[in-house]
Image (cartoon, rainbow, N blue to C red; front, side, top):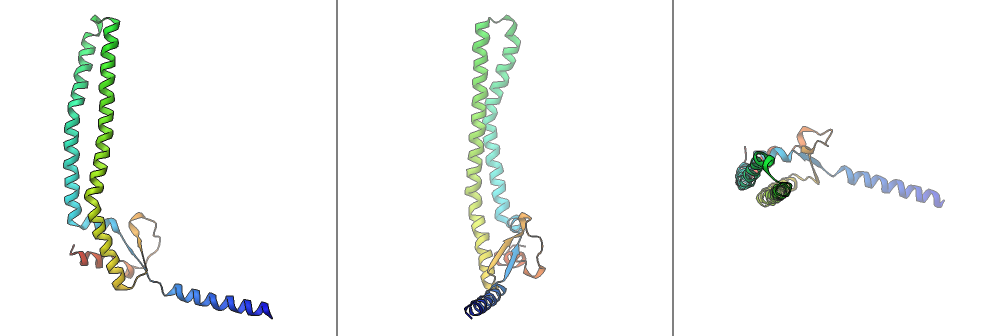
Length: 169
């Protein structure tokens, strides 16, 4: 008898669990398309590009110095002593190392600037998505831009609604 009561309890609780899951609404949005449509993103990309070009211009001086030293070394190598060749070789290696360090530091600066510039845009988009999902009663919103969403109904795409909320065309 106890077995039947336990089985009935599990069956009834399973029905309630299925009913609760069926009430959860799921939507999707292509966040990359949303971000691309936002004018703030275009301005941020332009700002990042300008910043990267300024860092590249600063690094060009090191590359020019390296090129000059290499030409001088190649032109004078035949008349140099072994000791001078070693000294000039170390100078060239030092410049190569400085170029590599500069590029690494520049990449880190660009990544930090990217995070600084894009974070408010991401936050604004996320807030709009959360607001629209709440207004429409969605419990979950999946990002379809990563290509993981295999099947999705067209009616549950929030992109148009979020664009409208943000005032983006």
